[in-house]
Length: 434
Ligand code: ATP
Ligand code: MG
Image 1 (tube, rainbow, N blue to C red):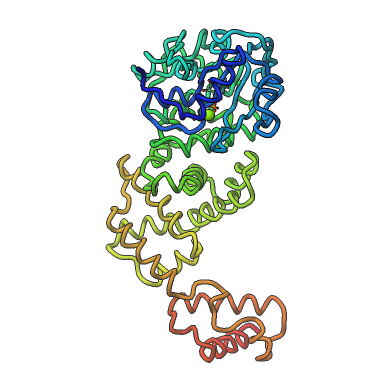
Image 2: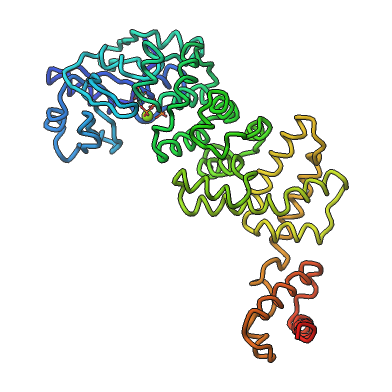
């Protein structure tokens, strides 16, 4: 008896294919994860049946041609979960990313075209039998990521495998077999072949999946992949990479948050403009770019002052605290402070004089309280431009300047945020500007 227990509906799909005279094997991530003892919901199958036969057998209503040119049909199980059923195939030509495939291959040939030994294990649910021609189980047991076959050739066929290998190593805490890592290093200069979308996707998956993403980024850097893929991060310091593992993150149920905060940490030190450029080149969404740019802008404008103040003094003053929240943006306080705190911790760990953790925590609490309570933005002021015009100040840039000055005064003392005080101060400023 093995550890492998695919869900009942997967067994049914396999049995249906076998009853029709074909082979049917569970393959890929689910088999690997089951051997590792991790749950995995998407059990994919490989079969000797042609894609057309798979569609006939399960009917149009239960199937979706998800990647029919590569032989993949999505089959819905009786619980409505989609499983990929892919016809055994062999590669006849590759261009460094895409393969031209041919059907009519055997299971062994199909496993031979997979990337790493841990991903090239097949399991028959109906016979409880394992086929593992490349020693994937041994490598899982030894916690090693190893290419199937000749590593250099495999990396040349598909440059994405270099990043996948690093991702699997970081995700499971495995080491990369030396010959495989050497091939990844030799592949690094050619990774420019990958599309921006792919690079972004790998970076995001790495940030979502790895418990300790610093390991992965250190390998991206050490292999040379980082310099090729994200030139603006070519000089990313080891301390910043280490900071990734200092990020205190809520549990796995907050994956999207974890993804963007980790990515932001990599880019904040570039400053707002260059962070924006780098993320645009990688085709990040507008909202992701705006978030990271906001954190990068805040780090640029107040990060150093915050770090120095907290290194020198026990407490930040209330005025400072409000200014920092205003610079950060009320809604950005939590993610920004997670990032700042991780960067400070990593630098402190590397021997630099940085704010102690308890002061950072106290500041964070102070900032959250100010964000919830104090006027911090122009829209929080008790008067607006219309009130200034009604008081006789002519429309134009003067109004904006006066509002900015009023906000400054209110950041210094929130008690001033009353229409009477603000109007009187506005008139005084207006007279002095005439
Ligand atoms: P995850 O849990 O991240 O989805 P996975 O192993 O299921 O991991 P997929 O990208 O879903 O990864 O791919 C499914 C399987 O297809 C892999 O396990 C591997 O056998 C094969 N595979 C995927 N991408 C490649 C590739 N670039 N080169 C060779 N084989 C690949
Ligand atoms: Mg998968």
